[in-house]
Length: 133
Image (spheres, helix red, strand yellow):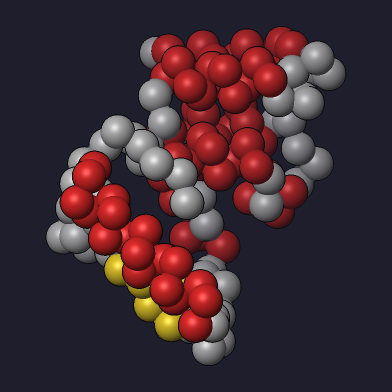
């Protein structure tokens, strides 16, 4: 789980922030970490057990990234398919950026250090331009 400087409260919008665990060791670690974040950083999430996982429908994947059509389409241009984009590390980071968990400066650093940056410098710059607008 990434730490951010944003204040995420347990009742933000219709969604809850949850970290799932599948064994006792994970539960202990996550529970302690959740308490530490609440105490020190005013960040909230719920540790919950998981026994079975169901992937959400495709339109739910990277939802915040999808809310910016220009950013989504310029990022999709880097990948061979929508599925490849959705599964990518970059899409996860852009989704976190759109959700307010990553600053613009941090996002630019991620883009600049991406393995795609030297391969597609023009497309990376286009993403940065969309972010700046």
